[in-house]
Image (cartoon, rainbow, N blue to C red):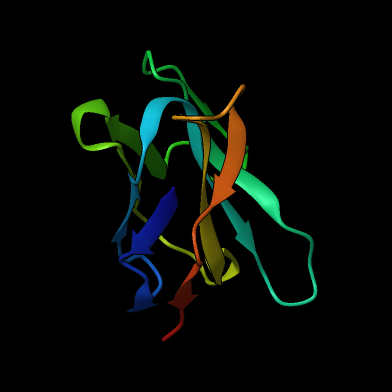
Length: 120
């Protein structure tokens, strides 16, 4: 099982970006999918998560600006980021709770990280 993230880059304050993360491999089922971020010198933090039923949860710092969504048919999670601020600069990691074929339970998987830089 692999998670492949994409969509990061350099954007000016007030701009927007859309991150994508696709899960691939021998997947039986996916429960929660989410995005975390880690800024330089800081701990990794949860940005947003979404259940397989579509219930979303957001960090207070991104509420009203970021939207998480998923396409269960494509095993893909998205993060639409609007009104970006310099403090949103971080490496963003996707995460998914996946039951792979041959596994006895759900396990956490991580993508490789994609850098988002918000700067003028």
